[in-house]
Amino acid sequence: MTDVFTFGESMVIFQTHDIGNLEDLPQIFQKVGGAESNFATGLSRLGHQVSYMSKIGNDPFGRRILKSIRAEGIDASHIKVTKDAPTGLLFKEQKFSNAMNVYYYRKNSAASRMTKEDLPKSIFKDLKYLHITGVTPALSDTCRELVFEAIEFARQNDVKVIFDPNLRFKLWDKEEAFTVLNDIAKRSDYILAGIEEASFLTNQTEIQDIFRTLQTNANQIIVIKRGSDSTLVYENGNNMEIPVVHVDKIVDPVGAGDAFAAGFVHGLLLNNRLDQCVRYGNVLGSRVIQQHGDVEGLPSLEELNEELDNKFISDVRR
Image (cartoon, rainbow, N blue to C red):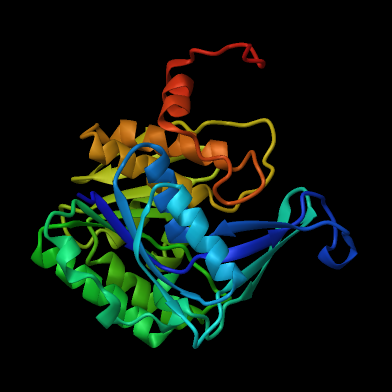
């Protein structure tokens, strides 16, 4: 039985492990990523049953993605292959230690052709959580319809909706993003947003104003991630702070939010308190940013528990 369902676009990622201009660097590595499949990978590595839906091209990149998803133990039965459109691609360029450029090649991609007819409606019967990001509705009009259709089926089946805004201004304009993402937010049970995303969605800068504006019903739980500052949780008019996990060096910041979402939902599936859910999320986020790639740093359940229990002090395991 599937606990969590998510859908979106996976891409083959090309990136170097060196700092510099992409056109000047001789070596480039091939990886797999995408907000929703990153999230699914994080949850699956922690031992949960998660289903992922997407559409890929009938090309080497699509085959690479399908192999990767299956290898992670994710239910890939809802991934469709099409001959009519290519698999999306993404290039990362680490120009400086603290500056990353992302180049998309995903216009008219296979995933952008997903429609609400692709939705496996029967999956909602025993589902616990539906995970939605703000990336998928930015891909196309049909993908946007798919997102709202999925939310409607979730509401009808008492499935909790988890929303990560995941702002991508390279995919759509700000006015459109503001309207659509707020429409999704008000239909969601959990909102996991970065501080800049939350400020954008509310047109507010003070944290209490952000919370009050973003929360459209009393039962919503809002989590605000603030980079190296503590993570904030707002529930029933009250908020709490949970410390983040600081790391010595950030290698690749992409994928941290997806990792956080996976850790947070891991806690929900264990019926933990919200502060513990956030703690899981913060640990996963800190792991991912210390390696190249969106998912390479995601821990197994054993590794996560070891870190939480502080079982290993030495930097070498013998």
